Length: 170
Image 1 (tube, rainbow, N blue to C red):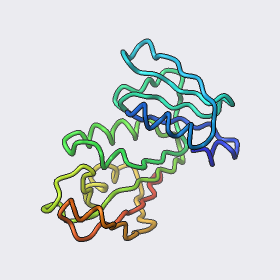
Image 2 (cartoon, rainbow, N blue to C red; image 1 turned 135 degrees about the vertical axis):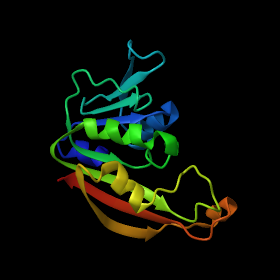
Image 3 (cartoon, helix red, strand yellow; image 1 turned 45 degrees about the horizontal axis):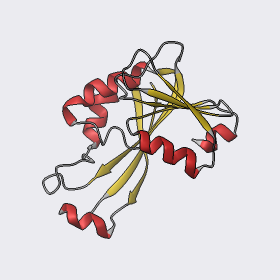
Image 4 (cartoon, rainbow, N blue to C red; image 1 turned 90 degrees about the vertical axis):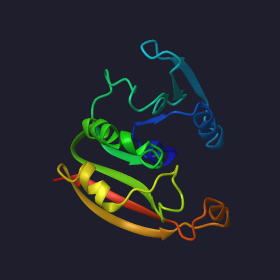
C-alpha cells in the first residue's frame, strides 16, 4: 500500500482488524489520525498524515461507499480466503460493484487438500473463481508459488500453494 502511495496513488483499504491497521502504520513508520465512521457503529477510518492512505476498520460488507467512487485497482491479499464460503457470492458482488472501467483486480488464494484442513484460510479452487467472477472478468493465473511452511503441518496438510490471479474487464 505504501508503495502505491509513494507513487502518487490514493490508497483505500478495508481491514476488519484494528490491530492490523495500527501495525501497518507502525511498520511503515507513518503518522496517522483516526476518526469514527458515524454511520457504522464501532467503525473507524485511519488516515495517513499525507492524506493518500485511508484504511477503514470495518467489514467489507459495511464499507461506506458514499463519496468513494470506483476503483481502478483492487488487491485482495487475504479477504476471499478468510470469508466464510457461504458468503463468497455476496463478497464477489460487493467487490465487483466497486470496480471502474478497465480495472485490474489482483486476487491471492490458497490451494491445498481441503479434506485435511477446513480453513480458514479457506481453499478457493479455480472453478470457484470462475463462478464468482467469470461473467464479468477475464481471469489469468499469474503465478503459483509453493508457500508450505513447517507451521502448516499442524493444519494436517502436506502442501500449500499460493496462487495470484489477475482479473480484468471482459
